[in-house]
Image (tube, rainbow, N blue to C red):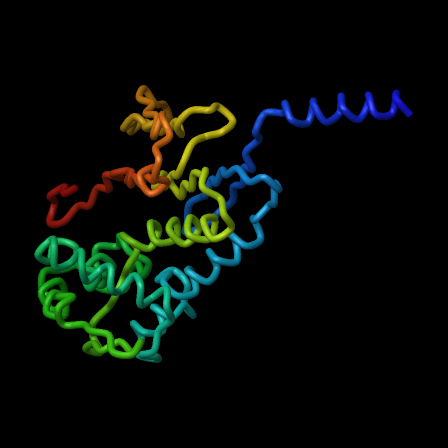
Length: 258
């Protein structure tokens, strides 16, 4: 009996001394990939829940999916939208006003005309086409009432500049709803962190890609977020957007533009 108790105490001591281990999940999403790390006491794998949440956000906001809500809205097939769409719409309104129109989700068809958007070769890229499309640009011309979008038929909405960050917030909010305060959510280089990396007992370390244009990947800068814990978890949350500038060449009237 004493031997059994002794072995039990050894096992208990060993389990108490085990180092924290993060759950690490990854997969494709939004035309890029996600990498999520978090620590939970029960080590539950939430990959199915993450993929389900991503699918819902995509179904609402992706202009790359023909039967998404935003694609149907742009074809004037529906006017009613879901909570995700409404959240992004209202956040975009705030940014639109604060940037005095520099950020404008109604520029989508002009982007398509230059073949940078989801619908390539939709228009001829000439000055008259651009001038015509610009008449319907202006987020101030679009509104929402009781989840119904009010817009001109020719208006085209695209939230790709903000949707990826919103998807990150959806995952972060889910983790926090499960009582998880130490996490990193990364989608294509945009990320949000909270708490600490308990595996390293430090802040989350993030490498910044060098701007290489030869196809090689390297980084010479690493930043550590939130090296020391604070009393308020709200102060321990960091979000960073790191967009890669892809220089695409276009030749118009024998002139090269960038």
